[in-house]
Length: 258
Image 1 (cartoon, one colour):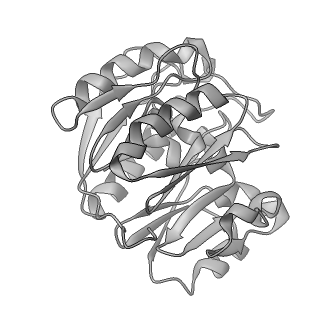
Image 2 (cartoon, one colour):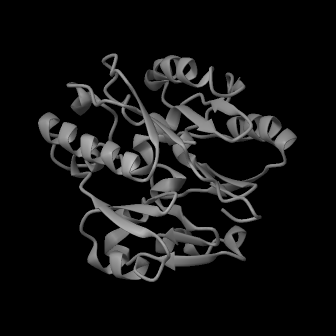
């Protein structure tokens, strides 16, 4: 990350997919997910996190159809963890187990009503947090987050997401000074000073990548985006996440990394 802060991650929290994952929230018109295939894809994802040097904490499903998208439930900084208040009320019960898992590891704060905040809308770049204003995250949620993290030296930049579910559906960190973004967000004025690699318009899903220490997890396929990333210093790790794609999910959604 920029500003002299590029974190070395040591842990990740994941949650196994539930057999009812097809009952989760989605805006796509893709085929429903195959549970057995989703389990295999999730296991490969967990193995990639371990190969990147992370100790992975796996939580049980508890029957939440969207529960494996743990990123939306919390933000974890070196100094503090923030339990979010997801924009969709049906997802808020997922936060309880995440809070319990984080409490021994961090000071824990919460986003409270009426604020709404999904972790998928928060991109941490050094000491800056770009926070998407989306259908799931509102100004009250952003204001509460800013109040918590300003004490630790972080600033908050609100970004109008426009199209797309979350901010990180469209822009993500590649290395300390480089982002990967869709054409719709690549020209944002607030990204000035950062190098922005732009995915081809027909490979927009490929913008959802995860930098984990020396590895960059990328969605399988999307050859032109892979070529775009080939000049980076990261070890490129392609992963098939087709069953999560059809439920509006991607690589960033499936873990909390800290």
